[in-house]
Length: 613
Image (tube, rainbow, N blue to C red; front, top):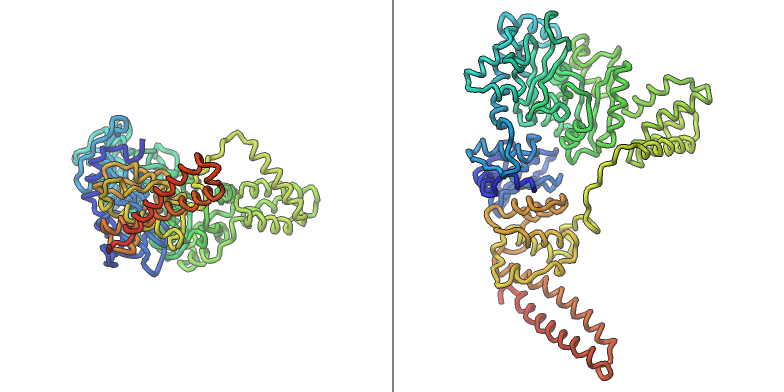
């Protein structure tokens, strides 16, 4: 089943019709007319000064020529709000009043996403208001002692969960929420008790500022939950390995500054933002992992290779272990990875409190490379004056370096490690190779590579030898109705396209039934290869060389067909040239008849190549 097959096709079309691409995108991007029915603006997915983000309302698609992101309204909501396909469709259906009907094997089993979001939003408001009550005095004092006044707590929507035990549940029930909805949202425990009680509360939001869950800090000694921090349990909205606290506040700064600062707690995020480090985020209730790394890489977008990811680990053993874990995820990043450790191991919150906002800014401005931080911590444990100790140090470092997939990084690390351990580069390389051998024997199955197209994945848009193929496909993607002849697509076949990507796209085009409405979006749904999806989105917004009309469509199709016929004629004549027509009449005659047929085709096609004839 394709993702689009989760819903009735007509309902998905209705969502796309009501949720106009320009309306949805305009909530995030200032769009201006760019001619030929298109709109342009600065891309919301990467930093740029010249607009390369293009929206075509008539086809319901967007595409950025800078970072390559594109798709329809659903894809935009997926990307901007970090949602799944299903969640994005349900979000738009709720917003624009479309009733979704699900295919039999894809019916949602739980509460709708919109109800869970509404419950969390109301809970955040309730907690925020509760912070001003007498019961919350301890919480207010805690915040003030850490340098956060009332204005700061309001900026970050910090709240308080009352001590009564059922206050939130009773409040939400007066707003029409059922026990099932409250349980599934993670706001209520079995038995009707509030999930959070007598704690400071931080709402955890996605990039679109929707509340997904909460982080809560212990305040009172009689709290029955011993953990200093607890978080919303795993729910349909909240997955701790996929969320970052402060993401809604930091997204714009990450894009504009080309770097992200990863801290360890909610108050650290607050301290950084108040100090002017507005690209700070934190993981929630779990260690920084691979899914967090992928999320950050998406945020950095096209700047990934030149951007920085800066971690503020503690300088103690726990900080070193956290750094090692991140180093093992280093290959997930295109960006370079760094570590900022404050003097005396202060976290950003304490650093701001004990020194100043400037101290926090200076901390982030002067990081150490992640590799240096990890390896220097390892080497400190060994006596570099002892040969056996030096070799043991190399082996421990080599085990980490062996996981790095980028050869250029490995070469650099080899040189640095050899110098620091007074060991030859060949010895370091040998130990890395041995460590890799141990990794390869691991029982864990490596992830399978994504499918690839034969040859170059995507042709260059200005490749003159392929312009005819690209123009025909552009017509097909933008307005398939112009191909109105007796033969489907004016008789074109796979063989008329020479590039594998163009062949693959044409093949899919011929398989998509019912070309309207939302033809281009349906075509993208049908495609399984990301390169072909990207190609389709490029073609949907590129300006055609000529007006998109049936006559011009037929003309370009004829030109493409003519190239194929002339190629076949040349091959046929070369074959006939090697045959004696006098002595091999039976072999020569059918080839001669075939040549006559092709010549007739060629003449007819030449007539059609001129759209004005």
